[in-house]
Structure formats: structure tokens, C-alpha cells
Image (cartoon, helix red, strand yellow):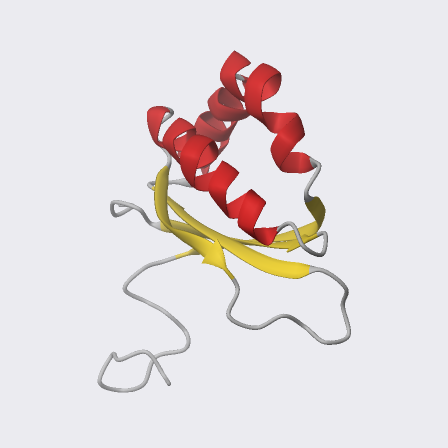
Length: 122
């Protein structure tokens, strides 16, 4: 049986140089509240503490959680298909993004990277 918020999604964004503060403001003012309106749990988001020296641009992250992969698909479809996102906010946010990566992991009581005492390995 799946536990609550059993799917964790980590997104990292490479933003055009000099746009991170604007992106953060747009994300916190519009994107995060809109995601929450569509039932998406935003765990955290913000500027990366480290920018990769060999990659141009500035880093940003978004961590979200869902009860299942099916829920993730349904809530993303509702969010990305909404008029508020498509007609009001999408273009302003996307224009600041140079590239992005998404990682989706399933969480459970049986995590491969745990030690004998069931603590996450540092």
C-alpha cells in the first residue's frame, strides 16, 4: 500500500544569468500558489547554494511530493493545462529557464541506501 507522499520529485533549473531573483519572485508569487491550488505539495524551492562553474547560468530547485505516480500525472495535467498557468504565468517563467532536469524517486520503508539502523547513509 502506498504511503502518503510516497513519490518525491526533485527538479533543478539552470536559469539565464542574472534572472534568478526574478524567477524566485515569480515562482513564489504565482507558480507555487497555483501548484498548491491544484493539489501539488511543494516541499521546498529556492536558489541553489552552488552554481556549477562549468555551466553558464544560475541554479534553482523545486522539490514536490505526491501520493503516487498516477496522482503526479493527474495533478501536473491539471496545473499545466490551467488557464492561469498557460495564459498568465507560463511565458514569464519559461523565458528565464535555460534548461532543467527532473528526478522522480519512490520513497518507502525499503530504501536501498540505508544502514543497519535504518538511518539514511550520510
